[in-house]
Length: 212
Image: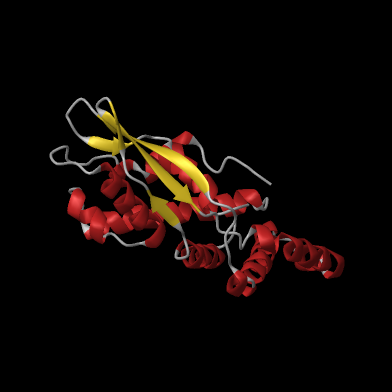
């Protein structure tokens, strides 16, 4: 099942800090690799060498990316809202999944003032491979749940979310990857002479980093 994972406005929020890099001696591939290492692996080392950003700001980008994924989880499974505790469980699950992100940044190709950088992504399969078990678990839950225990919708959402989280976490040991996908990331030069990843690039990568 494929869905567009986030609105352009949300993508812009996640990449807001990542959109500037000094033009002098600029290495587009190194820059893209630094951005992706920070967003998906929480490793800001290379990223901070290239841009004027603090460790706290780099961590904020990583946390924002995880939050966008957690929000998509709620949307994907039709859950309007969950408690803070359950939301944190979703965040923790995605941090574990993100830590397994697999991508390769190829050599940049100059395109006028800009660059095209090929990124080869290996989509993580743990969620899509959990769908059958999730469906079975939800069916069992619905068949055996007592409606009187769920007069509060958020309590119901919490239990359903925890059920899905448990199935995915239990399947984490079997995490693997689907066939590689190639994505062209545009690194564009602005009027001030600074380079940055185009607004939709992280959104395109994010749609394929984890398979749904």
